Length: 286
Length: 235
Image (cartoon, rainbow over all chains, first blue to last red; front, side, top):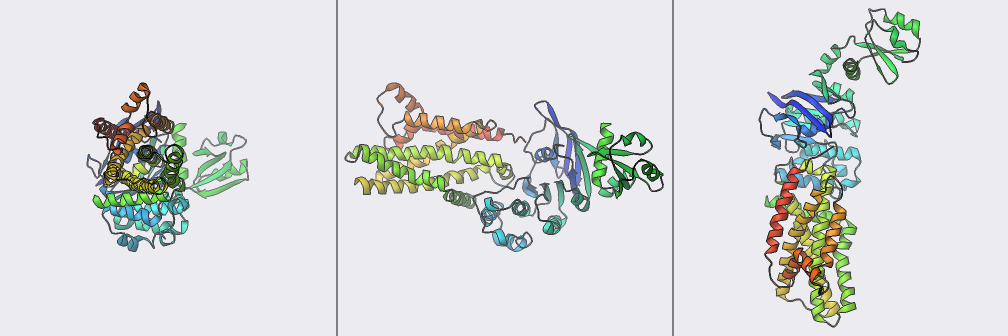
């Protein structure tokens, strides 16, 4: 079953295309990470999925229904939905009453996990970004939704509790659709990755492992992009980023010999999702 | 839903009490103004004290409705809170109604303070009938001015232009109204009578209910509902 189906979404603002024919689907129990650089359209797509922005074209469906119903969906926006002049426990009490839940049950189930006890008497405006994020994530799951749509769930979060919170989110095999700038965490936590660039999905969403397997090799050599090295690399696949050339490196090839003739200043690394993204962007734009 | 409304009202009131400036301008300032104006122009004139008392209540109802509801909701919009509230399993109008009810509670407290000041400073006793008029005026006035503030805020929400417009409308309404003095000029009177503050003052002063209030209420509520549903959450 598909918990989210995004079909052919196009969205323009003042003639500028923000999203162009974006289609993707999220299967039940998947943890789907949407990755892309700043301004690629991630948050706009989240807004469209959550029905906050109407697209020019296309549609979004949850649980294969035509009508949006957020009862089974938990939402986390980039900014936490909190009242600055309420204490944390007051905000949680208010939201539990809206959901018809008992505050004590939420306290028992989540306060220790999310380390809420330390901040429950603190005004929201006095919380750090990480503390606000913890409360925001808690509010997204208090009604025990089947599907979570999370914009930047790891941003500002204390790394020591990220794993614990993620396990809580994944509890009951929830489906999670999220965006993040933490690609290492996405590689670790997501079961499926989608890349977005310039408002387009640039690669068929796949598991992190499958995505890495689409690269020419599982290792890369990185050299500084000086002296126009790229013209000597016609036999190898590479991309240029941040004034460096990243060349995909198969140990059976004679790439190392060639590099040694050009420079002694290079490094060999294993590829990751960022390489996959930049390589596909490079292929798309050249 | 009643429980949610109660919770919403309680928490909105709590938030109001935690903002020192809001408490000063909503609770302290009207009493201060009543005391000064009453002593300057009408310490011995009970009719003027009566007019001033209801006028300051009307003025406070208008400013509370216009400034304490619309801009707060706009802040919800700016912070993205509205996007979140729209995902919750309740009608967001309950939340706004709680906000308005919390203002009504604070206004009832102001009325009590003003009545006490009238007695202590000017030996003026408010009758039960006057009190009922004040309560009616507060309820109707606050709903009307709150929705007026919401309409102004939401009509200019993209351009961040609502604060100036609300100020302009508030002061035109106040200075053309019969809140603090009688108006002789026919033209000013006409403008004042078209705007809703004079109608609210009529209720506060026990002079009767103008049907134009119903038209204002229906118009502003319908327009707000339309504007709110039309709001696009741009990025």
